[in-house]
Length: 392
Image 1 (tube, rainbow, N blue to C red):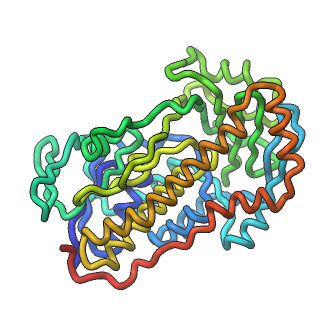
Image 2: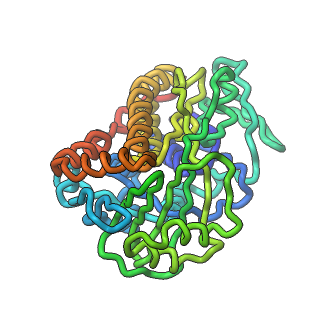
């Protein structure tokens, strides 16, 4: 018999955690403050480690069927010259699965479909948890109180529960960049599955989907809080003279489809991902910049690792100790690497720095790029076997 858990946050990480806990026999309630789980968002690239985590959770095949493998593409200059090319077949051969592109909304729907509707509680916010009883956690909601053996804080970059657990932590900070992104309204002729283009203090990228549409994103150096009356028009002014298919991607986008968010990160690492019977997961634990495409993958790793620890350890306490030991060094290392990747790739503005970056990338052997991806994606998933009789 499993225990009971409350997962705070119904995003990708929270839903994945709930799926993993249910697979090992736990009773799970997901509490999401939004009243409607709207299928919004742009696109996402899932590296091999994210797909492997989904396999452990039992939803890998469904995601593969809805995603488009990324075999072709690479990094270019605004004029269209290639800085580095990606060979997805090499990565697939090394990792056993290719990088795949999928709309976030589709991934979210697939994760929700793996859970019974009755375990999702929407329109309710968890402002705090009561940990005064060492054997249980009390979670006050708007009109009731839940008791659980475990609380999973998957409430995002602005996690209130993180603030309760670590009141002295400075919390998320602005990374120096902002991102605008959208999915095209209709298919766009594309010659590659995935591209990044680096200019001066700017990055433009696209991910192709199975239906011919594409997600595009623009990352810009920017102070926080800057917003445009017409975001799409601003993107046309900034990127309209960059190489094809960038103008076509913008032309295929509705103005009201553009999402704009400042990029924030936990630049100060947390001292632990657990406290008592609370486990932090995803952005609540390690919000990072998007420059490696690893944010969601790390959250999926968290979910699989947490479930495996609870499935194989004799007590909740020992399971959370193992979860912290296995997840914190790795995810914080990936966050540091993402920050460095942004500083070397999208962030430089001085012409000499941009020229040096481009030269280094052009001269780098193809194997260097492959090894850089393998370093973060070559993750071995845990097993959910050997379940203990009951958490203590």
